[in-house]
Image (tube, rainbow, N blue to C red):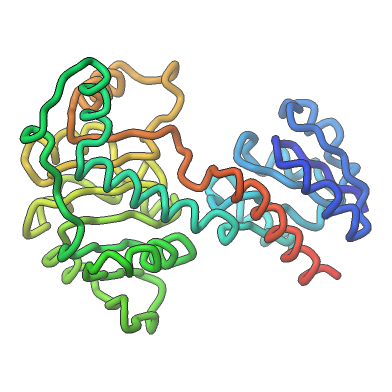
Length: 309
């Protein structure tokens, strides 16, 4: 069986697949048009998120038996068509869940303690202690929305910080334990000091956090988004910050992550966000560590082997 890899991967993926008997073609810079010309030759595809797996492309993949997604998000894959064709889909969210949790907490602590601002000031010879007095995580209530691989890993990382952890998942129950309280959305709205998003991008979660929803929080919160930027728009983020609904935000993902394609409104709203001291950004790197780069491959190939061999 032949497998085509169409995105950049840690090269450990090649011997892992070859050990399972696959013939591997590694083409990380291949264009969509080229994929459509040759995809009919392959039983397997290994992807990240560069090229959408839509019906026009998948219809060309006449031999396709499986797709392996090196990561978590499935929003660029036509899941209905895969189901019609009975094509297996594997993804490797477990491979970077620890990295996501660490990044989320690291960014929150950086915000609480003004690390970025203070660092830049000291480099310029500015020594401000009182202005950079920090906030402690201990004693706060953290609301986790989405309790899959990422949400549960985040909860596990938080257990050492002496916080109360509430977790809400619309599609999962019975996961509460001595460290995590299973909560409905209303309790999370009432009790949270910090809200961390860990849901996939679906029609249901796109623009899920509207201003109408955010106004239901009983007290001002800090927002952590390492999930998908399209869950909350730039405009809504600014409105929530202006109204005091958000005390601050840490954003690893954005509504639009291609700056050169911003609309006029997006450019204006992002500029407002970028001017705020109580907002911290990173370029969608939660989960993007040296260790997860390797772990994702192992998780993915293990799933392929267990299901197809």
